[in-house]
Length: 391
Image 1 (cartoon, one colour):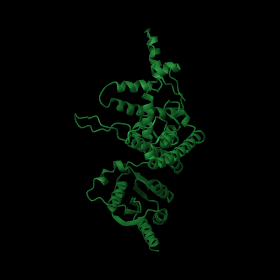
Image 2 (tube, rainbow, N blue to C red; image 1 turned 135 degrees about the horizontal axis):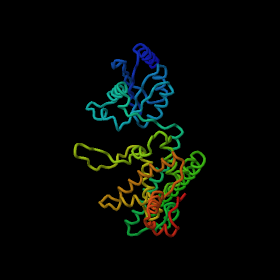
Image 3 (cartoon, rainbow, N blue to C red; image 1 turned 180 degrees about the vertical axis):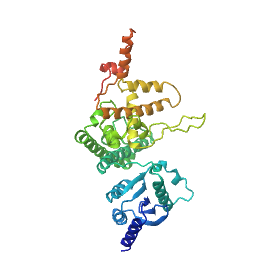
Image 4 (cartoon, one colour; image 1 turned 90 degrees about the horizontal axis):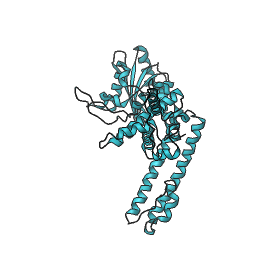
């Protein structure tokens, strides 16, 4: 009853004082809200349980209001719920809220007030983000669950190998998928009571990972056919292509394909001041899961089994510039270009030409009467008869 009376009181105050702005600092169990009137005066502070029932009771019966929340664990479902209640919801980017994080009097109530004041002053100060739909979020949860399984299996395998090395022996080389089946017979007798349960767990994890892989293959064909466009690039498999489609969701949200690199945190930070412009690390903003997948694809493209492509040649040229971190910089640079390339393929529905720029240069040289230089191929490309699209 008390909750209903407070809700009605807030509804009356909002109706009587014109445009209102609300800031909500979301917590795991409890959230704090701060309501400002049109003049920026605090009308109400409240502590609310972070549940759908409590939030509906609090904000469901009031006129349309601008509500600001900070991106976090609960922000996706809370923002959807508040929009269903008819409110304008701004999800603030925590990387941009230095006013909140650098406050010497930081607490939940103060954070809620700052969110409300920033939303009232200028919503752009919050650098608002747009959460994915519920369906996309559920599908991404499957991919991230697979990633957690892979990480857990890797840790167990490393532990088994390390424990056996500690007694002066080594396990033979074997594939990761076959490790659970084959490693058991090679474990020294004195370590079997300790390590055999781990090999059983590794086998179980492998089965679950394969199940997730089958799900990805099925979804890529049935629900996300656009991922086939991205898999034209060798090194981009079903997992990376589906993760890219789910993370970007709408390719038209980017007016320029080069914006995708910055969106995924693959562009360098900038700290230019006067004559000083140091070379900094990448921002690592955006989705870290997709960023790791793109880096893995870039490592394959630059590795010994990558086919001859413009992207590979460009990356190797970056690596040849020298320096202690030249190879790492080349991998990140190729990952950034790959993110841009995939967006371009998606938005244009085009056919991937691995050596388009190289062949264009050769044609230009021929038109000028110059002797074209043959395309240099690595040993694998020569064995396969040249670089292809590699579906």
